[in-house]
Structures are given as C-alpha cells and as structure tokens.
Length: 204
Image 1: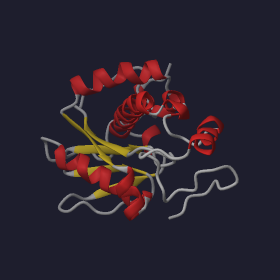
Image 2 (image 1 turned 180 degrees about the horizontal axis):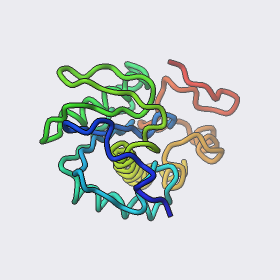
Image 3 (image 1 turned 90 degrees about the horizontal axis):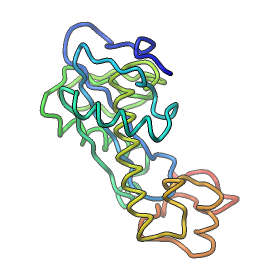
Image 4 (image 1 turned 90 degrees about the vertical axis):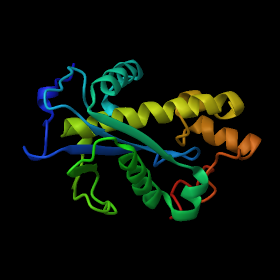
C-alpha cells in the first residue's frame, strides 16, 4: 500500500497550490482530459499516488474521496477534433487551462506534471517531471483525469464496441489496432495520429 507521506504536501508552504495533470495523450481515440485539484492542508489518504500505479478499484475509491475532500477540483476535456487541429501537446495544455478556469478557488501557483506548459495568465506555474509521484495535489489530479477519461471511453464503447475501449480506453493495443483495420475509423478517432500497425509514432 502506498503512503501519502511518500508524497510531498506542497511545493512551497505559503499560498494556494493547484496540482494539474492530464490523461489520454497517447490514445488513438477520444479526448484528452485534464484535472486541477486544490487539496486541504491536512489531506491524507493511504492510497494516494500516481494513478498509473493504482488499480482501477483504487482509483475509483480515491476519486470519491478527492471530489468530496478537495478545497476545489475541476475536470476538462479537449476533443479529438481539437487535438487534430492544434496537436496533442497543445491540446494537453489547453485541457489543463480549461480545468483551472473552472476552479471556484483561485490558486496562487500551478503545479504541472511534466516538463513543459503554456503559461496560464495571471498564475505562475512550476513544471515537475514525475510530479504525479511527487506532490499530492498532482497525484490527485492524475486520479481525477484518469477516472473521468476512462468513464468517457467506457460509455463510448457502448456505441463503438469493436475496438475494446472498455479495456484499452483508446490506447494503441493490438485489439484496438485490429478493430481499426477490420472496421475502419469511428468519429472519435484522432485523424492526425498514425493508427495502424507499423505506424506507431504520432504526427505532430
């Protein structure tokens, strides 16, 4: 079991920090989803960690706790059409901006998972590589982004059942690529991505 004391509660002791993270950058279909989370100073949970290190059940359990206990949280999406138009990196930053837009408490600092970010007007930011395994607020954002996006793709699977989205959530698994080759593209596929076997890189 992961302990929250292995994660840092804040980047700096003063001010209001919002952790930001995204899910779905590497997917072949669906939106990229970002979350922004402001946690209370005394927040603790024994499971909290980078969402990739958690089981589906643990993420769902944490989502309920985070959404109930956070000072403020928000989730935002950038659609597959927008991804095709502006590229996935810019779309990831835009999703984070949209999430911050929706917070009902204005943070004084944004903690961004990763090494790059487009500045958000009026709020300084700090990029942290592997931030979702370092700071509690980013870990919480990673959980919300992942669970909300998974929920979207599970619903989309009901409309497009031939691509295994209930299992792969749009990531480039063998079953997903086979579905593309056999059944073609759905309206949710990202046309700017290379979608079939032998074409594994992104066109950015």
